[in-house]
Length: 190
Image 1 (cartoon, rainbow, N blue to C red):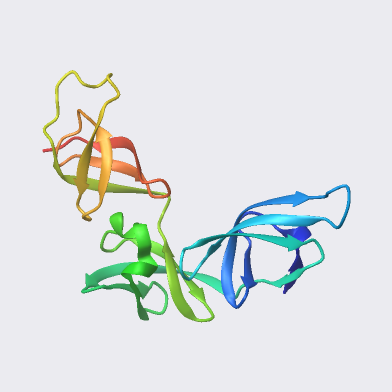
Image 2 (cartoon, rainbow, N blue to C red):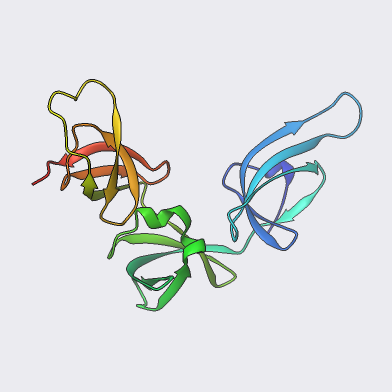
């Protein structure tokens, strides 16, 4: 399917120079003289790099051949993250680079969305929120619930997140995977 710059929306996936890009941001500009154009900020779905580019308003683009499939994370072996399709039980793997920062919150048996480009896996999308246990952090301080201070805590996945000072090891917390921020305490530690 072909679209024009008037069809640009955040999240639209298009082909540019043979690569799949997702439009992150765009601005239509109509100068007093000359033709109108669109300034875009796009993310390369294969590499994760961000690109800013200007297109004339008459340009046309092919939509990317992107498909998302629900898959379950099985395990990490070396530098390969192994996933299983929940319907066909077919297995595939992604590299550390393809998984990116999602590896900080990826837990065994977690359901995810794997992005496929022309049949090849290229990335993973986690649920917006995950619940993970803190395995290592400085001791909690009584009475430090209102100061707003934070400390670094190591998660069961190996990732790290900043948490309030009163959070202790063994506490189950909720994290926003899009920003990597602590949301709330789900269950107290041991």
